[in-house]
Image 1 (cartoon, rainbow, N blue to C red):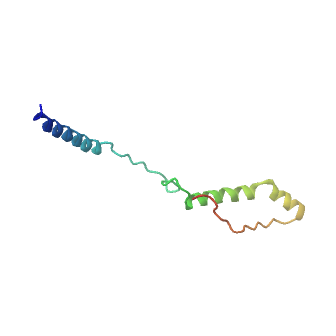
Image 2 (image 1 turned 180 degrees about the vertical axis):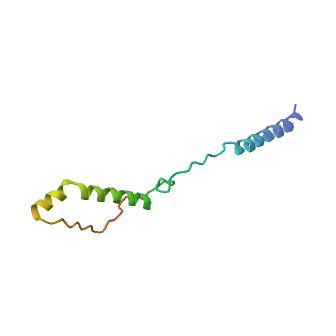
Image 3 (image 1 turned 120 degrees about the horizontal axis):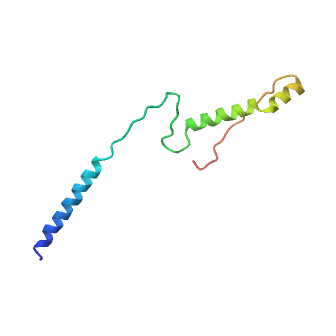
Length: 92
């Protein structure tokens, strides 16, 4: 029985190595084309694309809300919007 142990261990190690090799070869990747105007976040962290999207959304909200028309009617001229320094105070 003792002589059989190294053979069993070698067989087990060979089987594990073969399974690892076969497991690493599987799972082909699929590639999907997207439009050039599409932004894809690969990292999951805040990046320049996120900053641009948020800025565009804030500008759209600020310039299309009713206060712009109210200011124009009350003062006879378009309002001036001054944006100060912006600091990132998040953990990222």
